[in-house]
Length: 344
Image (cartoon, rainbow, N blue to C red; front, side, top):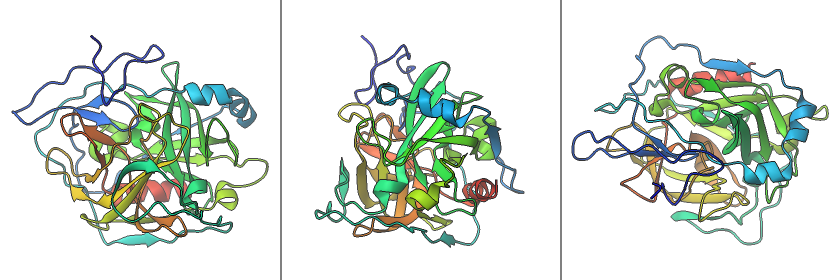
């Protein structure tokens, strides 16, 4: 019998998850929100901030636009995460003074007539309209010859071209993904605001070096499309770094594994906790599945306008603790990654 995670079987030639090793009685497996299994990795050393790693793409923009057909986007599947080394205690994520970046939304769409409702929500379609339906999108890429998907978010940036996502949505098992595109406002195989190829993808230094789940944050700098820059077309959400734990947050993404199919923007909302187990991440009750990795978590989210301050991304879930999502703390390394991306 094939082993599955949250109902995600092996698909499109991708192997089923590796069995988990146990560490103490309480240790189970991690389920990456965009993919499958992992145990926690050793943490990087605190101190002087190392530079985020990056990968530049030489693939022509027109080639990627033609490559990602509606059928390929619909068929893109989650990846497996190999089982990395285990560790016994959470990391202390480096942090400094809080920093907030305001949204830039020059073409704010009208909010829908039906608002989803107030906190909490464990996973349902977003019907409220607003900016989030344009800034949030699906991420598509090729990994080890397989087409896969994650989620991402367009943010306010100096270059007007920055997308924030999860680290494993740009690099996994030592290999940077190729054919990387961001499709804001994706729905049902459609790309209403275009397919934006990455000129460069980046990740925190800890993810680049050892794929440490505490620093599972990635970014992309996308090339102009038809002479326009990304946030001039869809707007950009704000950001918040070093803002603390135990916040009211909203998480968004495009889960593509059952019971979802990747065709709609899904959200969760509620009051977060600090992971009491094996990471320094935020935790949120949420049943999103594979494909939601890299989708944004917002503090100070306004349901009427669909705007907020991005403070994390969908990253992983514990297999033994269902219907909960975890996302990395946006500390100094996430801030440094953002700064490098927006000045590229």
